[in-house]
Image (cartoon, rainbow, N blue to C red; front, top):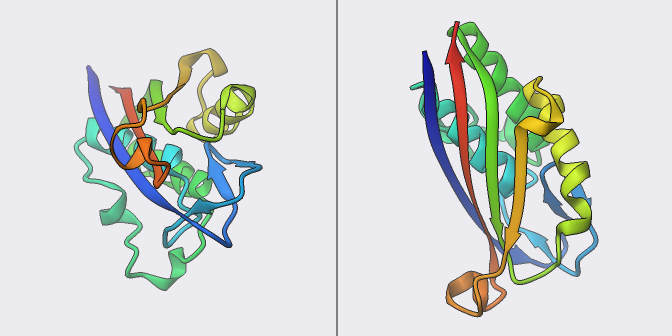
Length: 158
């Protein structure tokens, strides 16, 4: 049985933190605010996978009220979520991710992000698609206040 899940995450920009997306630290004057490393790519993908498996969301498994997840590496959380999936008989098949950001430009980082994500997922690199889009100046993304990410993932029940 193949199942599909959708994930979404957004974080506002904040000074004094690195910008981490898809497990890659990207040079930028500001990073994203959050309890963990605020990697919106990993968070959206984690939610898509958990949703496809009927296992809740990232907040259920790694709540921001728990100090053990403070400054956590979100690629590690993604790997932990995949272990939860596997324990319930699900296996990731593929993911399609869209990053909404006015800046920075992200095309140069797609390969490195895909490698980090597929490493955590345990699937071939060609099974993860990453795209970056601007929001054409509209909304909080368009005003440069933060980044949003949408992810779709398929899992197989084995």
